[in-house]
Image 1 (spheres, rainbow, N blue to C red):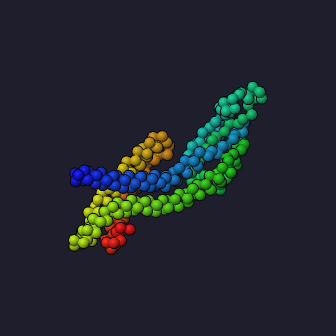
Image 2 (image 1 turned 180 degrees about the vertical axis):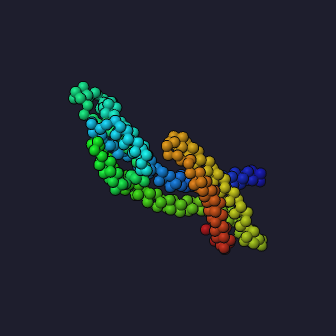
Image 3 (image 1 turned 120 degrees about the vertical axis):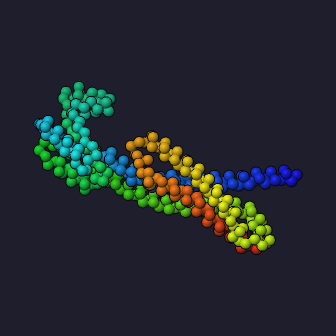
Length: 292
């Protein structure tokens, strides 16, 4: 009978530890994912900004030397990420594939123009900057027009600012929620041992002596939960970096190490503080209050 009761108690204890580790790992994993998002917000914003193209349309009488020099000067400009020349024939072929029919046969001529697609660096994808660049290029005699999606640029910059702000707000709120959830799990674990705490106190054990094993066990569970969270975040990061290599998610190793260290430290600190507060609460309770 007593052996059966011991097995029951052991299973109950293991179940309690498992639930604490699982809750810590899940919360820290979500916190780590949010940390990745915060770290890569600017990188993601830059990626979308650099998809915006400024198209320089060239006059039909533009000389090949002039076009070549313009392309080279644009490619070497400090604001340029890439500059690609697109002939009117290539543009017509691409447009025909897009609409599903050969419009040249219907028109009898090619109305399109030679052009250069310029993708700007993210820092220059601003309404004022693009307008100034467009005016400088348009001043050349052999340039017919400089075109870009001005409403898209304005909307993109507004959305980037708005999303960055809300991500910071969400980070603060979620960090608070993470602390509260882990604290709740630790308190429930300590609550099940409240009579043991009070018994130890009644036989003369000091508060620090009583707290020590509970804090050590909780910190141990916090480390295990943090390591599980780190493995999960690392796996997700590896998957995303392979699927979206252009984002270079593994480029900032220093920031990633700080994030991983923060997750591990968070698992230790939060469990230590939560256990200290929980055990202190039961140490200060009267014996009769333990039943409520």
